[in-house]
Length: 115
Image (cartoon, rainbow, N blue to C red; front, side, top):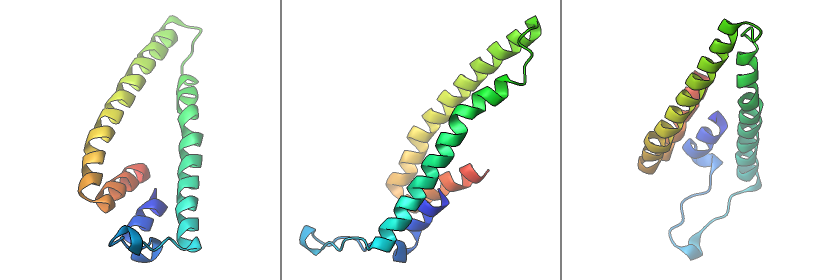
């Protein structure tokens, strides 16, 4: 996410804005390579942590006891509730920020991912 934020923030890492459709300058191979690298690391990080969080968390409960099974059920309830709330916030607040200014939208996401 930090690489994508830098791609937006630093003028050297993206092509200039188009003044008209005939005046567009395409990105250089370096600019395109850095963008693809940022997207690649984002996919690797998201794909690596997504499926593992539930499994590692459920492994902390003793499913052979009634208290452990109750803990697993409570965990699933809170996990999916929090995931829904996070998606609701991200699909409203972050999109609003990105509509105002891409740097602040991506910067906020970078800070949240670092935390």
